[in-house]
Length: 275
Image 1 (tube, rainbow, N blue to C red):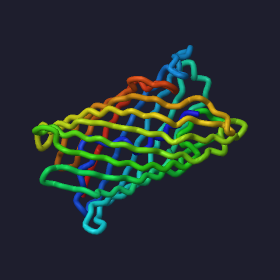
Image 2: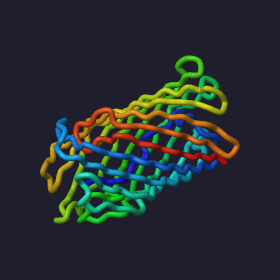
Image 3: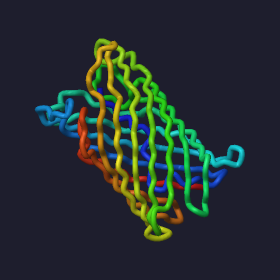
């Protein structure tokens, strides 16, 4: 099974900065991804698979305070398609709405003078997306996903900031997996991300982030599939602030993957408005 759903765990450079209270946030993100070779236990498999995905993510949120501590909630829903091509061209793709993600974030520590922040977040993804058990490729996952995240951001030197975050995701069961409607379960998955952001001016900034993900082995009817993830990837970011909002351009790809289809490239265009 391949899903077009993207969990809202990846943080943007500078995003750990605590928001002003009583503000609304609108984010529109267009993302296009191309995946290629399939790896099993670190070995590249035969064939020339291609998976093209594209989606528009719509996020709305609101900031507030809890006992004078900053907090934020948002809801995000994607809509798009996943197209298998190459040696997978006989497989059926899918298009439509993806699974919806909710976030509740809280900042236990905020120091605007030193520009140092520590934040926590709780995520819940619910199965609102398109799913058919007879398809290998779906826009939704037909299961619930919960995640917890902790993140820290501080200046490193001059206009250079650094951030680090860690999250763990837990997966509910998909009780309609495959043509025989078997039960798919998955172990917890852990992701660490480390990033740098350089402030060029009050308008422009650039950044780079490294991600490492491990865990998430799946079982079908309690039979292990030996597909534990061990993934390294990167993402480059350029952002510009204007009177009408922030425009962000991003490019990323997988560096190395142990299991699954490797992502050859990912392009993201984001528009963010705080009001």
